[in-house]
Amino acid sequence: MKKGGIIILLVVLALLVLWGVGIYNNLVAKQETVEQAVGDVQAAYQKRADQIPNVAATAKQYSDYEGEAYTNIVEARAKATATTIDMSNLDEQQLTNYQKIQDELMSTMRANLNVIVERYPELKADDLYLNLQTNIESCENTIANARRNFNEKAKDYNQYLRRFPNNIVAGFGSFEKMPYFQASEGAETAPDVKALFND
Image 1 (cartoon, helix red, strand yellow):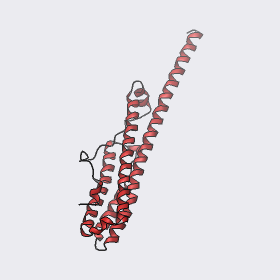
Image 2 (cartoon, helix red, strand yellow):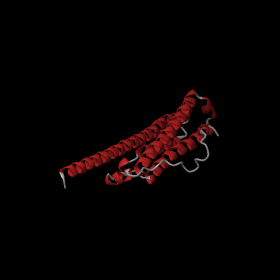
Image 3 (cartoon, rainbow, N blue to C red):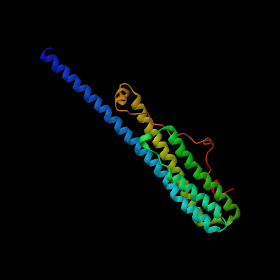
Image 4 (cartoon, rainbow, N blue to C red):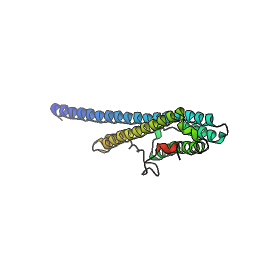
């Protein structure tokens, strides 16, 4: 092979390597963006879980007789905060389980507070309770926004990953498709946050 042919071959190989490195770096950047979005979702759920002591304290303040409700809320919070998302092993089942435990926390809180409100109707008018209602509604909105953002970032990453020839580079780099947060069972019915505090 002549010297000119070798130079052309080396230039083509160098361009291919630079092209592959560019795709690889874009995949890494998009993967990091998805991981940050997962962190935002977990932070939003943690913010809600941090409100639970206030819920429990409000419930306890209104009744020393509602120890079971207080205990149920605290136990559900402990279970929810002990569950995290492992990015090194992220799959659809892990997201589903995480979401299920978080939904169980809200369901437990709703059920136990409804019992307390039934027995202590004056609680509905208490400023602490009304403020708590507003905070929880805000937390639910933050969670919804964080999950939507995660799904958008995962979609962007997945589309980039699956495009040809990016999928070839992704195969060499062991990049895998990201799962999405799916709607919870019964999510087709809009949640009524006020139901948490009313019959």
